[in-house]
Every structure is written in C-alpha cells, then in structure tokens.
Amino acid sequence: MTLELTRSGRRSRRIVVGAIGLVVFLLAGLGSYAFARADREQDTKYCGHDCIPGVRIGTVVEALQDQGHTCADRRRFWSCELRVGKVRFEADLFRVDNLVNFYEYISKVEARIVNPDSTTAAAGLGYMSWFATLPHRDDPSTVKKVNGWLAEQIAGDGDTTFILDWEYTLEREANTRSIELTVKRRY
Image (cartoon, rainbow, N blue to C red):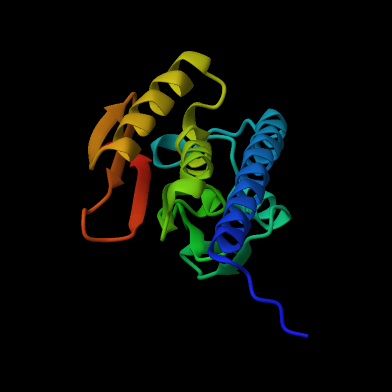
C-alpha cells in the first residue's frame, strides 16, 4: 500500500518539524545556559583580555552535544553542527592560542544558520542569542542590549556593533541562505 501526502499534509508535516525544532532549541538554550553558568561559578580563573572568562570550551561543546550537535576538535577550534530537516545550525569555538594556560578557553565564536526558513526564525534567534550572550551571561542589562541588537540585525541585513569589550558582527547577504554571527574581543 502506498500513501501519498497531499500538499496540505506536507505543509503540516513541515510545520510540525519546525515546531519540534523550535522547542528543542529553546530547551537547549536554557539548559546550556544553566550548564555554562554553573561551570562559571566553579571556574573563576581570569583568562585575560583574550577570552570569555570562566567558560571553558569543553563545557560549551558538551552542552551542544547534549542537545544533539555533532562536534569535532580541529586543534585551533571546535566545530559543532546540528541538522533539523534542511536547516543546519553550526558553531565554531576558537581557542585562545597565544596563552598556554588558557588553551581551553574561548577566544572567538562563529555561529551560523544555513537554510533558515520561517518556521526556524525563533529558534535561530534563540540559537544566536545563546552564543552572543556568553560573555555577559551574569549581566542582565547587557544581555538585554545584546539580544535587542541581535533581533534587529536578524530581521534586517546585519551589521557590526561593539558592546563593552566585545565586537559583534551579524552577516546576512540578500542572495544567500545563511546567517552568521561572530563574537570576539575588541582590540
């Protein structure tokens, strides 16, 4: 017996897949945020001007893997990816490479969403927001400022801004199907 989905059946299936993806990312963001915050309370070592203080790269990788990402250590950075249907969520976490004692800390984050669609828009904002707020996770007013800027840029064409000692760049080209956020220290 062969069963064919009607056009409305396929549309309903896409909506369900998108809704499941959204729920997964909202839960992933909250769980990962709590996990990284707990790690920061345990690790208060200051890593200088070159990294996100108190967040080890392994903590973030583990949180992403717990939410279904596949991650690989590329020596200078960790690369993580999650596919939800045709949409790919990717993150590269760069190590501090000039300070031996701080090799396991994050110096720069690049997060991408490839092939976003209308059903993943909220999940994409949540995904990007989680990475963008890592440097300021203990400062609610700065987190609010970062999230406001990020929401404006995702809805628009992207831009660069500086918030405290951090440079945020969101790139979104009109003819591509991807959004990329870069977070790094401002020098």
